[in-house]
Length: 136
Image (cartoon, rainbow, N blue to C red):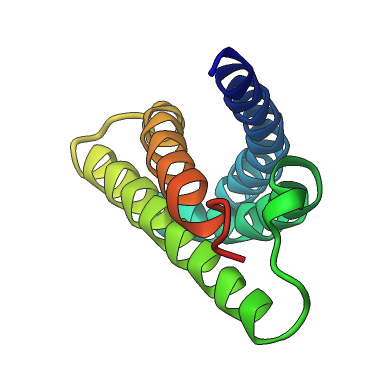
């Protein structure tokens, strides 16, 4: 039992590291889009989409490698579920940034709040559904 708890903690730490990598892609792109004059909500959505790609690559290779489905229909289904979990995070992120922008709150601060909400939601979905043991 203690060993299982330790393994879960290692997975969470690897997921956190993968999330930081994906966040670097996401937030860097977000700032670049803002500097190009793109409105905050669409900039946030586009940047998050780039982060999704980075997160799949990191998660499937470094976090949940043992639970990734073999190539074929099961892998396609798993990628679709991963994308679905990302859409939950995207909706949270875009909604939080849009709401904050409408209240004249700095979109960078709103993006930071959105990061926390999105991280929590996607971790639960991915760990419990997308990459659960035996799902592949």
